[in-house]
Image (cartoon, protein in one colour):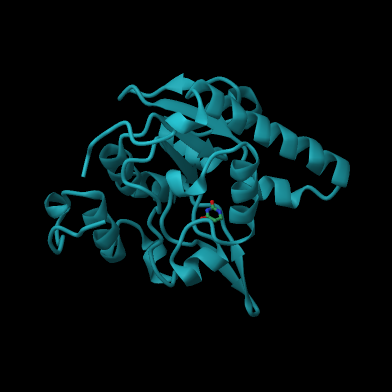
Length: 220
Ligand code: URA
């Protein structure tokens, strides 16, 4: 990705790379104060699929990259299992800074609130606007809330039912991979993992053959 110039103001952001630089100065909500850094999305700027999680976790906050911790491993495994190349998808989050409560040496994840999600939608809109994917996948309720612009999302009601967003992009909603990590019982975990993979397979099938999961847009 090439940064065309040093983006100082919103109007200076002319590319995905510009946005990825400008996000580090984001003061749209207070979350920047506590986090190590902003974590922008990662992947090709012409990806056909954009996966949207909630916010960076502990590992992501430290490394500055999305989905590199345990939830990222679950996502990677599922993506790989259904035959999509992770290097061809773009992964990002609804909120770009890690929200947490310190507890001793640990940092306990806190769910972002509506104001934080709304403030950070600026960045998510830029990412989707520059990439112009065919499909956006909301991983969990926070991502769905951001993309649908409403609270009170029930994943079980929305999953399996692709929706069309106002710009024509298809939106799929499924569980967040960290949900799978929290299920204590092995049998339930296996069942939920299968459902998660089935959701991703539905997306893959809807988009046609895996070979077609490649650039559809010539945007720079
Ligand atoms: N959970 C998320 O929602 N996003 C990440 O990047 C990591 C964990």
